[in-house]
Picture (spheres, rainbow, N blue to C red):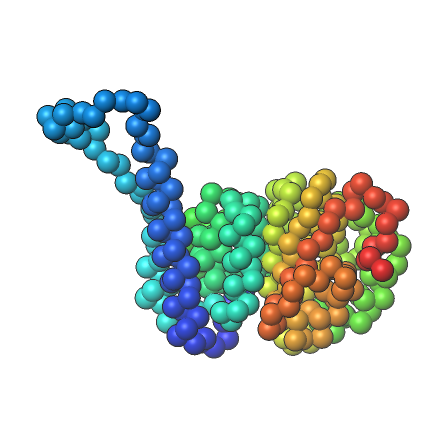
Length: 286
């Protein structure tokens, strides 16, 4: 989630534009909700009556939430931009435009976190991060973000073995990940993560670019199991960095190739339906 290098100025301008558009929409909605339509067949008020009415009931303007204002200021002045490209961000942003306010779970805490929370205004966005020091640093800057520390016991160099483990019956049985006997299931997440029905899940962490890094094998598997175990409906799951072998192979195997809705650059978008009402269905559709 944390960028390794600066992105282009165009990406920064897009983020600002998205947040400005969000601000305009917010103000328009607020003004519409506070205005009262004129009753039908009412007589036209006199100038004096209109003046008195105006003084008594001034037009009210919607106030932008403080943290959304902070997001606008932050992205318009920061020289650090999110690691995802303009086109990659747009994939998730379009889904949020339709679904928000909603429940959005993000594996990773980074410079794009404030943006995701702003785009899901009114919903709940939770970030799961492996680096405790980074969480504290981000909390000091953006205390409104809800984030939790997660410990990963896997390593990238174990990916091949974990892929074999994942094909076993204990890993293809649908259920709550915290009670699973599958080695790939994350069982130490905060209780609210398991108890929330997620509309969107993004896997952009943990670190996975060197052999001793924890890798995203367990995060991808757990995201897929949460989607399948959802009581009803479907879950949009996004996996970033699918140009790397782990992200590519594990998302294809455990989120299922036939559930891929779109791929843009290094971002792969899956739509996974619930399996709760059809336990006899295959783990992945044929």
